[in-house]
Image (cartoon, rainbow, N blue to C red; front, side):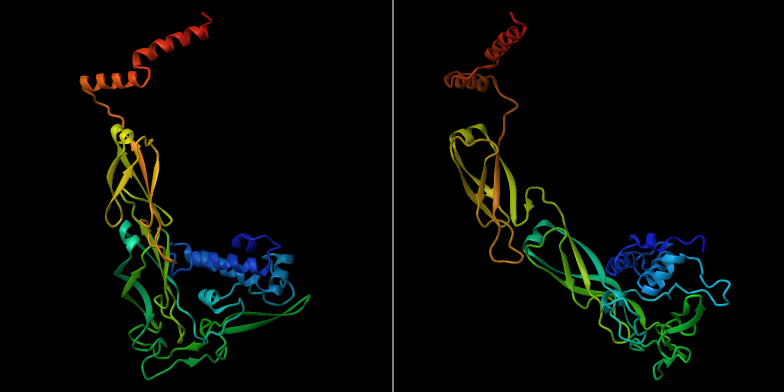
Length: 372
């Protein structure tokens, strides 16, 4: 007992946490460490630790006893066995999808696990949509025994120890009265049934691993990080329960020219000094075609122009976003002597200072700072 962690620490909640807080913390950690999801070597031990903590803190009577005595057995010295706070290694997903935190009927239908699949697509595939096939590994009900786990022609027997409840009650006499604790039936392992003759295909598990091909329709306008839900494409349920869902997480590659912000598209177009000063009509690439854009004379670098309706189709609406074009005036880095002379003449006509004149101005400014 000395090596056991505090149950509140295990779940990451305060001692005064409400039942809802305890339940939320358990769901999060149980998903994280469930052996069907987490393949780490210590995942099963952590899962059991989380479940044990939840079994205690979700039960008012057990929690009150734990708050008073901790992991110490209050029955030592009184002839009774210790209270069993640790529950059996059950399936957490009845908690997620079955509703409520109470004890479940081990023979009741149980919903299958949800699955997640990450898909990377091109920029324009996200804009215009795409249809494709994916292959996912998942657990499905065995076709031979139809999920019962029993050999065809036979059926599981009700456990004679727990009479199908999957639980055993241990009655203890304590200084505070009689205490009834429940734990998983040791005969059937908490399943409520015993399979005498196992199905040879699934070895009594009722499920088999398969590679399943699924056709996916990605809607136009989907963005990076979007999640598509495919109902019933997760793992098969137990005892006639519904299948889980498949969640496809979309990752969109970047584009070398276009950038996206919500439903709008952004791009940059270079202009020469002459185009910006005199004006021009240029071709602009959009997501579907090239269009003409008129550049007014005297356009400054950094100016944005809007192409209405040339953006991304709205995922949940009508119409499309816009395309925003930023113009950048490019300064030439290599000039011929003739070009240099023409620019000097232009500067002079415009009343601008040339490099030589600016040098003289800076010299005078330095003298002013020195107090000359």
